[in-house]
Image (cartoon, rainbow, N blue to C red; front, side, top):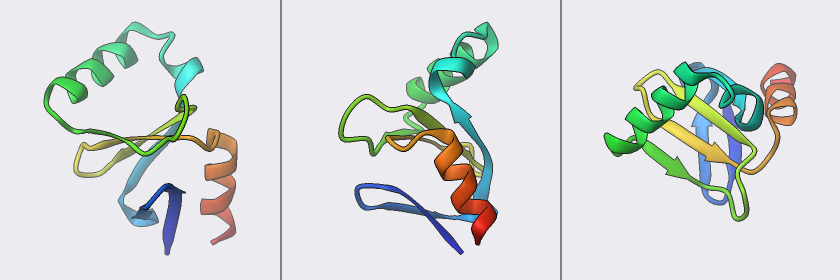
Length: 80
């Protein structure tokens, strides 16, 4: 199944490593370091039309910034 992340972005649910709340998770130093490294490596894609609320980590180490909150995206994966 595919998980719609917004815009034209959808990913296969089997490729998802984790769905994280951007505000809560980025409070940790290690998360900020991970996101900065992913950005520097060109592995971050922003599909949010406004301020992103969630980041999704994929198995290929890419990160997608998305508009829907993490609870909504998690619920979508569980309903599939």
